[in-house]
Image 1 (spheres, rainbow, N blue to C red):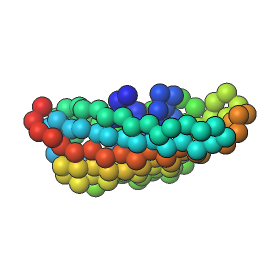
Image 2 (cartoon, rainbow, N blue to C red; image 1 turned 120 degrees about the vertical axis):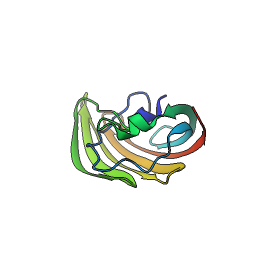
Image 3 (cartoon, one colour; image 1 turned 60 degrees about the vertical axis):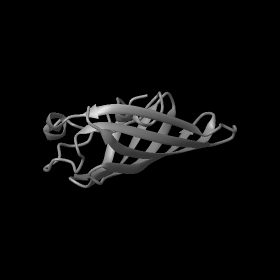
Image 4 (tube, rainbow, N blue to C red; image 1 turned 90 degrees about the vertical axis):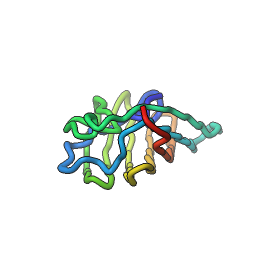
Length: 141
């Protein structure tokens, strides 16, 4: 799964507004590790995913650069983004269910870290997901 869509296959995600400053992320080859814990009526094992991707200086300077892609049916409640990170809160609605999402990412030059918390209300009950993300620059592209 792409890091730019960090919240599972049926991602409920957020477009990040154009940043006034270039993110504090060094261009190069990056490795991202995400660990998702799901709590609900059914027992679901934790899920760990690792991805590598090249991030160029041109991408970082592009107003459209985001770690998170837009998804239909979602409404942004609040968002803040600057060179050191981003945070947001949103709600997504689909097929009789609703998901409340809170996320943040911290940009630290050669590292990033963050989390996404999702609370879903559906006909099958309440499901809580927490995904932690750690990324590090591992070299040149």
